Image 1 (cartoon, one colour):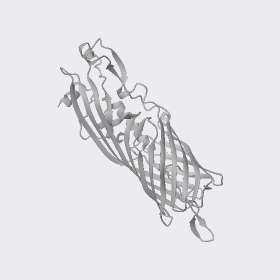
Image 2 (tube, helix red, strand yellow):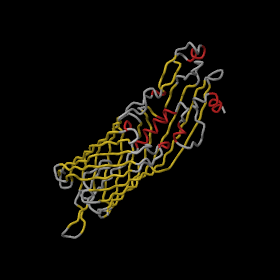
Image 3 (cartoon, one colour):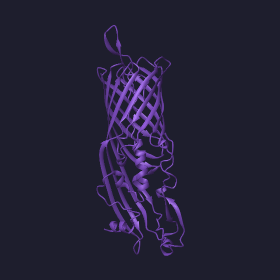
Length: 397
């Protein structure tokens, strides 16, 4: 009841979470008239671009052997999870992929989303009187992503790929707000939650091998991202994108009879077709280790660099009373005021760095492959996640 009264008295703030089941995750976090609105926009933008997909290039390659009259494997198994190889699967060959990833978004700009606090009170613009302070706020965002992918070798040099992510998202927000509207400060609590299931941004890609000769192999790639994911449910970017890239690899060098290593380098852009400032530069460097015909491991370093800020400067700024709370209440007009960002958020341009560790195992007749991996964030820029587990299967035929 007190939460409802607060929302009636302060329609411009709409600060206390009171809905048990909002229609979208963004609405559960904060509407356009809420002080949480800028936070909701920033998180929706960041989460939608952080749902990375696995590599689409097949872990195996087959070519037609004239002497035997059959397709034979002529490439060693790879352990790479996110970096693309500059090698095609082979003409008229198929590869189908099923993968699962779990994302727990627990930080924004280095601050724990489940332990946010901002005790500097907001003030009414006309009277200068303190209205509320955000004593304790907890935001939980969890995403389960299942990706279905298919790769077809159109020629001996050109592969085509389709990847469809299916995403389940859930958000909970819990508040403890201090209100200064009555005779004295009082604590008000509220909770809001929402969940959704849908298709993420579908990705169509082509990969063309420019050179297969050692010591360096190079391929050019072009992908199109379709805006099929709902950005209000943190499941997509909300705009189409074009992703030109190159993939390169070194020749393999043998460490022993059972161990061979090689380096992999990827680089490219993710260009936002609606707003170029929303684009990113992307790169990856990895060490791929194959152990005989059944096992492979890889360590990958991944980077993403936004072209622009997450939010314009001043987006999170609100007018506050920065004197003692007793002074703010007793002398609302003369007490000292200043613009302060909510929770100290800035919305600056993020650079993301992640470490990927994992491998693959050949389960059956060099046709069915299982893989597992963990993606470990290394920075505190933008939106941050707990380590992201990855597991899946891939079949080639």
